[in-house]
Image 1: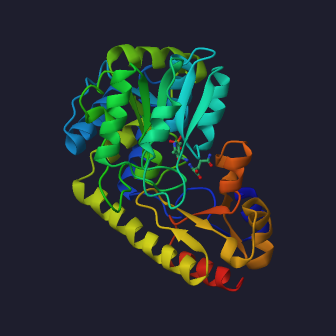
Image 2: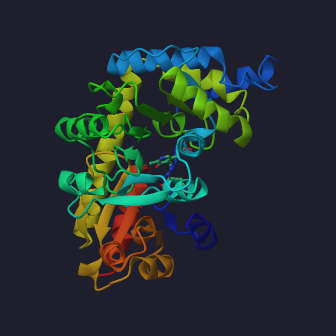
Length: 370
Ligand code: PMP
Ligand code: GLN
């Protein structure tokens, strides 16, 4: 869809990346690292020690949780590699992996690469909560792992403390490991982000994943991390060793700098995205779509049925020519079963991590479809 946007000159509200870079001082930290001659060769396997320390400090500052930077933090090539390395490390062929459906695209691929069996727990319109009975029903004696993503891409669902407590209880009762993908941890607009690992019984069984891309608006840098017990980190490191070995030298000190930005940076970033969410929610509603207001992430899920369309993939392919906008059809995030495809078919995702004037222009173009 980004290639389609580039080819047609349409406004790209498809792939999730901002149209403005993160803070100058963070960009300058990469330049300094490139010039200082100390960061252009392989970094240490687990990641630059000062970045591991900065990750641990960040978890302490925002969630009051302590991780040992030497044994409990691993730097990865974005959250994407952290997810792949964790799934390959923890899933054996035939193991069942329970994940929220719709799935962020790499989950299904990584579970398949590990030979695991994907079991979906449906999140369904209006995307205002998790069906705990469906989660209970998805767990079998063969379940090895739960994969959670909150705030959730693409639906914007943010798991509540009650939902997380129920998940924790199930994970402990069935002795499951859990991967939590928290890349949108600083993008919660309604409610709060609660890391699953802070709940009773979860510290020892949770692999927490996050990344610099979303929080600091440098999605191209691909620096992510894993926080977990020494045993779990060692397992993930073993697979990371043979995926990439190490990750982007000069970006690591810059991300350490970014993680130490004052609280005001994080508050302003969230307030800015909150305002953008409200602009695009309003614009899409005015254009006649059914809008499922997201509590977090920088994506909005819509239903295009009121515009007289039935299939989001067909709609998204024609959208550049119809009105000069690109979006993402959500059925690609759903299971291939007829029920799941029927739910996903009319859903289309719009990213709002763009300048306000771009969002307003996109909304007014969409309004011409009525
Ligand atoms: N998980 C989710 C839910 C995401 O939306 C993304 C970003 N597209 C990633 C992981 C990947 O993050 P990164 O760019 O750090 O690899
Ligand atoms: N996470 C972003 C998205 O969902 C971008 C990553 C990707 O394109 N695979 O749009």
